[in-house]
Length: 87
Image 1 (cartoon, helix red, strand yellow):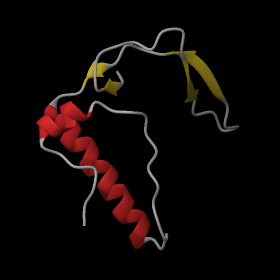
Image 2: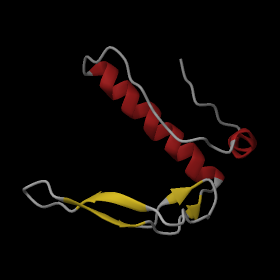
Image 3: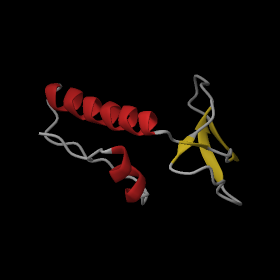
Image 4: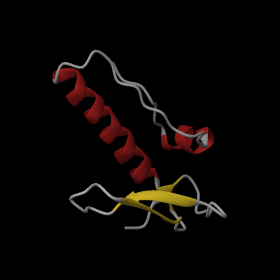
């Protein structure tokens, strides 16, 4: 599965930590793959998925949800008409 990102730029000299599914919980560092640039629909779907995950956690009894992310291209998010918040 190709990763998604705000732009199709490859992080040079970077490895990512991937869980390999082994029962012993092993994981490996593998070279980063070139991501596919997110479409407006991808941005909306990602925001909706994070919002639903946060709602599920609250309904499960968690007091709060913290989402940490790297800097994003806010111009693309604004163009998509999205907001990183909900009531």
